[in-house]
Length: 128
Length: 168
View (tube, each protein chain N blue to C red):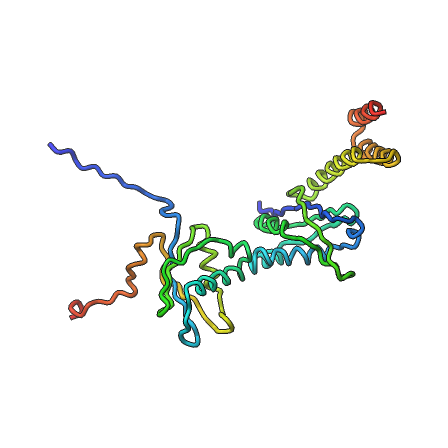
């Protein structure tokens, strides 16, 4: 006689301490060369403008940066997600050039950022 | 029942020379406070300051400032107070060095006023210990007697008179 399999369900209310954001920077006048330090400095200046010294001191990390497509992955604590996102939204210009941050994905788990159903490209065998 | 709640921050402005205190007015404090909140909390802080904060009362002789904030944001304004190092003075070009010392946070003006009366009485007692000459001591003792007899008759007055007799 086999025992019926028991299963446990774990429910997490607050799954992860961090939130990860995948963002890209759009510049009006085409591409410019950015180093990762310059990119982080740009985000810090956006935070500083909106939230002051106290806001700019909030720790966040630039995990990955792609200079050719200007895409990046940021990591921030849960408390600072709203501030960071709002500061990125409201950044208008960089050195008198219009620019905009596009937020592609936000997730509490880094693994979720690896697959994005928006950028999914179906192979040709499936469409036939 | 929806009641509009606010918080009253009772602060003391400490300056190195007492004469420079007399030149202050509410607008200078308001201006300095706004600049400090803007530096510490950015555009968000400035917006909160504009909607909800005003300087209600300023006592130029003792340096007591009474600031009114909304209940939702009073901690933000409070956190910008330690960053104020000098007050702008429109009359004279040089700035007055100062620092803000928050002594009480109250929900209504009445509680803050009660606290302020008690605080001033404690300050008078402390001044009595610091007095150097006898004339100053007499002056401070008379001030203590006058303020304590005025409020509570009976036990407190007897205690004050009893301690005075013990000193002499």
